[in-house]
Length: 530
Image 1 (cartoon, one colour):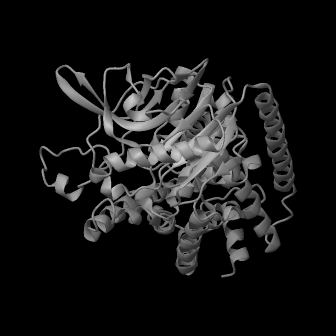
Image 2: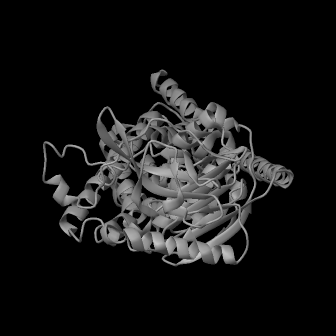
C-alpha cells in the first residue's frame, strides 16, 4: 500500500475529519490487509522520532514522525492491535534513542553486560508500554468520532506529562536545535512545544491525504499552519530581541569554566590528583585574563567538605584570587548521624564557603541504592553507586548582589525542578554542574546540553554549564550557544554572562498544556458515541 494512500485512510473518512465506526467485516479485512504496512510504519515512525531528537540532530524528522504513527494506528480495528502498534513505535524509539545508556555498562557496572542489557531492556519495555497505552487512547477517541487533532495530539501531551520516567522525554525538546522555534517554551514549557510540533504533523498528514487524491485541498489546515509558523517565528524573534536588549542593560559577569576530563573510574585514587589538576588548569585560565567567577564541574573536589557552613575555602582554592563555584560531596551531622550530599558550593573572595546547594533529585542505582538492607547483593552489582541524601530545599547561591541557581547534573533535564528553583529563589543566573564522563563519546552529552539549553529558554536566563568531560557551554537566554567545549577534551572556556530577573509565563503557570490536554481527552471519552 503506498504511503500516501495509507495516510488517506487515517484521515479522510469524511470531509470533517471524523470517522464513524466501520462495519465489523470490512474493518477486519482492512486490518488484516494493512497489518504488515502498519507495523512497518510504526517502526519507521519510532526511528524518525529518535533521529529527530537531541543527540542525533536530524530535527526535521520531528515534523513527520507523528503523521506516520497516526496513519499506522488508524489501521487498527481492535484496541489490542492499536496497543501493539504503539508498543512497536516505543520499542523502535527506545532502541535507537537510548543507545547511550549502554555506554554505562563498562565504567559504571564494571563490564557486567548481562546486568546492563537486562536493565536496559526492562527500561525499554516500560518506555514502550506508554505508547501502547497511547495507541489504545487514540483508537478509543477515533471510535468516538474524534478527529486527529483530538485523538492524536491531546493524548500525546498527556503521555509526555504523566508517564513516570527516569529520563523524561518531550518531543518538543528537540526543537531547541533551532532556538527560534523553541522560543515558545517560556509560555508553556516543553509540553507546549510538543503540542505545536504535533500540530505541524497534522498539517503534513492532511497534505499527504490531498496529494493522494482522496480529499480536497486542506486549505484551512494550510492557513492554520502558515499563520502558526509566522506567529511562532515572530514571537521567537521578538523575545530574542527583548532578551538581547535586557542583557545589554545588565552588568557583565566574566566567567571561566574548567573542563579537566578526568577518569571517573579512578575516583578512589584521584582525590589529590583531581584537585591539583583543577588548580593548575585554573591558574592557566587566569593567566589568559581576569574573570569574575571560576566554575569547576560536579565532583571536582573529591575529598569532601565537612559542615556546617561557613567553613574556610583555603584548602580548596589555595591562592586563587577569584570566587570559585565547584561541585563536591559535603557531610553534615543530623540527629547524631552523618548525612552525605552531592553539593554545589561557592567559595567567596573572603576565603570562606558560606553558601551551598544540595542535590534534590538523586538518580536511582547511581546516587542512591534502595533496598540494600533486604538485598545486600545490590551493592556488588552496582559497585560505583553512591549513598547521598536527597535535599528538599532549592535555595540559590549568593554571588554579590545576585543569586545563582545550581541544578546538578540530572536535575537540569527536569523542567519541574528548575521551575521550582526559579519560583522559590528567583535566581539571576543558572550554573549547572555535571559529570558526563560515564557516557563517553555517546549521544548523552549532547542530549544533556540540549535540555539544559531549553531551561535557559523557559526562564530567559543566561546559563553556564560546567562538565568534567564535555560538553561545557555558555548559553544565552534565547537558547543560543555562545561558546562550548568538545567531548572528552581538556580545555578551558571563557565568556561573559548577564544577570537577569523576571518570571516567564511558564514559571508562573507551569504545565498548563498538560492540564488542558487532559481535560480534552476526558471530555472526548465521556461524550456520546456517534
